[in-house]
Length: 199
Image 1 (cartoon, helix red, strand yellow):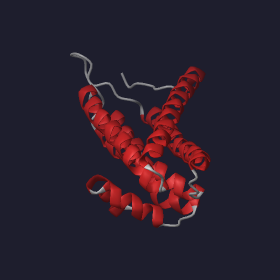
Image 2 (cartoon, helix red, strand yellow):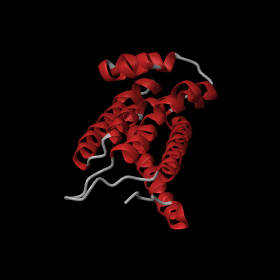
Image 3 (tube, helix red, strand yellow):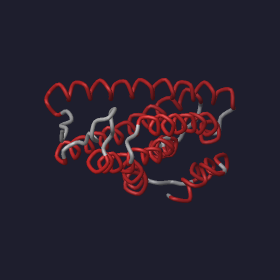
Image 4 (tube, one colour):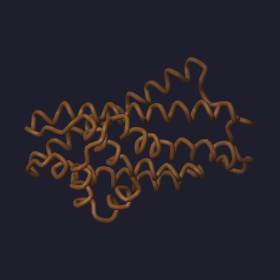
């Protein structure tokens, strides 16, 4: 896993070809890659919100209670895992339109590795400061979009013009999934499972 993560940042074209050549089951992909990468932002957020907190004006640091932070971290972790599965399923379904025939496991691998900058960017949650989060978050989103547009034609072995259309469709669905996760978060918070602050 680690060599793929490093490769996606150093030579993404070559790395996408290597990832495409691997045959893994969905369970193996989740156990060795997705579960680990998705844990980075969840664990970082738990540590940052319970040990560091964030400062608003001249007030003392605001932190979450341990119980609240655990629930929030678990829910965000599950949302990330579900998001990867939904994106992988969409990529698999959409691939038929472009005469590509990747396996479902390959599509989940593509979704996982495309989201790698977002997962690693989650380390910023260790120090929950607004500007740091915005800076690292913006950089992670930009590189994720870059990996998507560069990687999809290579991974699916399709022409670059078709890859552009396919990537744009995946990006649009990704935004819809993000909005759906945010809406679900609001609903769950409304049911009383929202954040609880220490002060």
